[in-house]
Image (cartoon, rainbow, N blue to C red):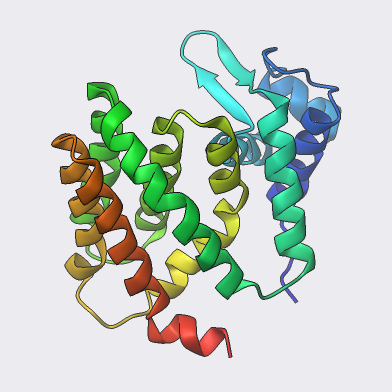
Length: 228
């Protein structure tokens, strides 16, 4: 059985306060110190929990102002889907089918709507992956954030909410895929192809490259073994 970490518990507390409207959308989260005092966790635990909730779309860090609570409608969608995935256990095939429906469209739409700043953000994630010599935490996080950022660029809050909702399961799949013995550059070259398609504003290539990436991930031998 997976041991529940204090960070996970703190994250769940904060998330529930957001979903229930105790912390209201577009307001700013209390300070790190105040949260630590209110929820009775260490400041380092609160810091990690907040960072995770940022990545999952519940919070948005505004430079010079603080941590803003995003639209609760997206948060509720995220919570509902994550609960379903958690409670029903092994749904890898269902998740891949869902990804195949959503993420190629996300990449296609992002190729049309992306800004120069969006490219800069994606490039930073790509650079982290390409400079990694091993599949460490920084690689996993960059890979996950690359996919989440594509959904955000699409401009569709519901689509973005779905992708963020299965982000925890997606991270497990990224780690699973990393067990493949193929050279590390073969694993991120799909992301590079998607990025180059966005840079060229070529929706078809962006969509096709994402489909190619997802098929390769599904054909991974470790994925197949875990799904039996």
